[in-house]
Length: 487
Ligand code: GLN
Image 1 (tube, protein in one colour):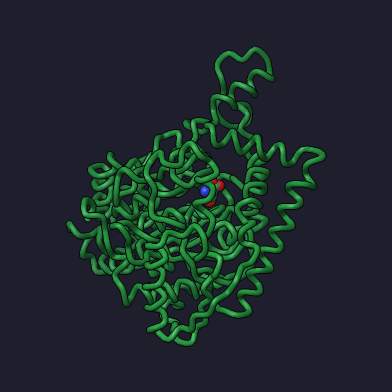
Image 2 (image 1 turned 30 degrees about the vertical axis):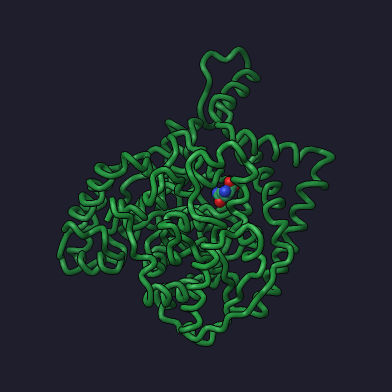
């Protein structure tokens, strides 16, 4: 029983089916780990013990009756950006500190329908704005590999919790890298699907044309099972794509032999730590051993991606966050003098510094006279970046590069320098601008810390990405290492 947290989702599923343990026992095991081990990490901000045990009991009944699916009875954590009926959804902000949603996000609903058990909600950067989890109202999350370092962000709570095996899996969202960068820094596998593959309904909006939810777990195998349940058309999200869901677990055994893997030249130029580059080399050697053909590809306009993103994302967030005004949603100030005072003080008190910075940038960029110069221009750059990817996919089936320029940085190291913080997403953001799927998986560690290998796919090619990652994971143990204090 002590070893339940070391098992994969497939192993847990088999154990539940054979009645080696029940979902209630499994759920208690992970709840106890959260209670005993999370105080030094701060990765879980709401524990839903009562609800989890009820869901686990219901899962055990389903298993008993022979009505279980592969995910029935498996516990997970949700990033606190997903609305959960009856359980607080704060989005890492004081603005929503006491918000209880009256409904479940589609992702939450689908995973619950598959029989998964929600243990609680994970800490995150406020409204998903950040790369270190330091912008959370609930305090920073610590990286389980070194608690003086950040876990990445904004899904840093989910990444840290999975890396510390406080849950077998978690959900995340990725607007500019928030699944892949924390997955890289914590040494887990995280997938950002194609834009529109997973419903955004009930996922608190940051930048609507970029936001996408995805699975975070130890391996590609685990992610494949989760994505199967998360993906699919949802008529409540007008940007969700009406297209059948592929058989992701079935795609895991596709051979890597003969695959053309495009090594993105620009991702290996200035700014990349040399040890991280060496770790990438090892992963590439492994792929060559499998018979993959490595070719060099170029994304010549990727250098403009961070600049374009920091116009598009703040512009969209300034519009999305207008609803938090103390009237319709969110924190309301005490004793307002008049309506204007109510708006001003509620928003001034409810939002943190990074969120305010983005709202100001976005409002400015969208204002009359500046719209064409900034937002429209950024959208044009976005088209050019998407074209770069189309050209690259004419030469390669999958693209490869690092997920992050360096290993996890120290808490506080970049907190006062927003631009250096923004640059930590330099290899992930172009993918969101183009709407493509991409994953980060553990590569060989450097300086004792995790490194993320990023694989980028063509639209709706999640199965192939998971397959390449799975083949690598079958041959290596990079993804199986756990920080000592949590093993
Ligand atoms: N770090 C990026 C930002 O701060 C991306 C965040 C995200 O993907 N949610 O905007």
